[in-house]
Image 1 (cartoon, rainbow, N blue to C red):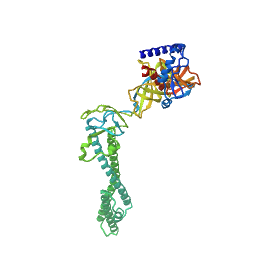
Image 2: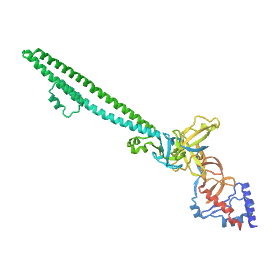
Image 3: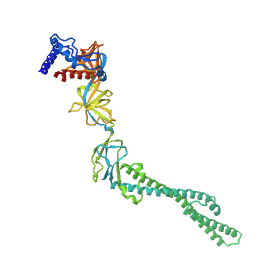
Image 4: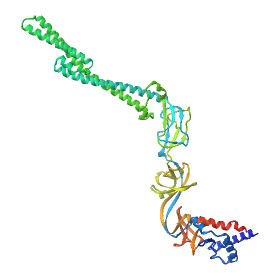
Length: 495
């Protein structure tokens, strides 16, 4: 019966509070928080003594508890309130930091080294294929490299022959003695040109000497004309032979150098093309340089390694051991989730208020802290079916809280306005469907109903119930409200 009587008293008091519009529900003195009995309506006087007795027993909070609860006060004053536009949005992967990893060559999956959700490092091997196409490309490269190496050696040899042959031809123009030529070219590589030139030159020198001697004898009438004519014929024949050899070698030594140079360029071009082919198939310069050349490494020639392009997380995986992959298959998707996109839906009517560069606060259920960002992109087209446009915020996500697919609320500050009284939104509490604050007056904290205007998650305009200069609870209002509810409906009413 006592419980029912007490509940009746509470109900009557609440009715009088709504009718009177100013009954003080609670107060806090220097050492205790008590329910204030000031400004009660006359109808409540009959219950005053009982209420004071009950409040003295159950409606107080020690000052130490108030201090430990972090309750702070401030003076009501004017402020600038950012008028915000709240719009829905969704967290998505930063498409600028997402890669679809596809095989450059078809092949059979031999190893899978990463699973869905695994972290990867840039350049890390995530799967290994065996590809005949890659193996053939490597063989072609090694063959081209061997041909190039041979052509390079041939060119170097022909350059030496060319240089020494040119030197020999210059010496022969001076018509020196054979011994002097041998001395000048001692150890020089001339090849077959040296033997042919020196042999022809020696025969010419011998024929000339014989001809000069026979001519002198014939002039002195010592030798017959037949011997003279025979010597001249032999000399002219030797001169013609030497001249032919000289001209042939003068042409051939330059031609052979040109041929060696051309062969070198062709082989070099073929090698570069084979190397480009390997790069197209995904091999790096280091991979190409490390290609094996011996037959004992033939098994490794067809191996193709799929690598992560950058640090990230495996967000999609479509690959299994033994599976045959084509060039257009999409076995892995890797994304760098240290930053994400927040795609905000902007309704057509709100488009005049939204533009790039605006600051945005992002909130989501389950995440205590807000995130702040800037609109970096505003879609130029309104969707035909949705009649909305897309605004985008690039959000840092180093801690991984903002997961792609998460629905969020974006608050965009469209303008700021000066208001006479602005309080932190956290200072406002709701009681009996009314918005209230705790006001400190004459050493007592009392609950006061206020009227609110514009506001956001940080500041709210007060249009009635709180005057500039009055002191109110800025932090810890919820603690006072909780204590008030505890004292009003706790076990103390059961006596």
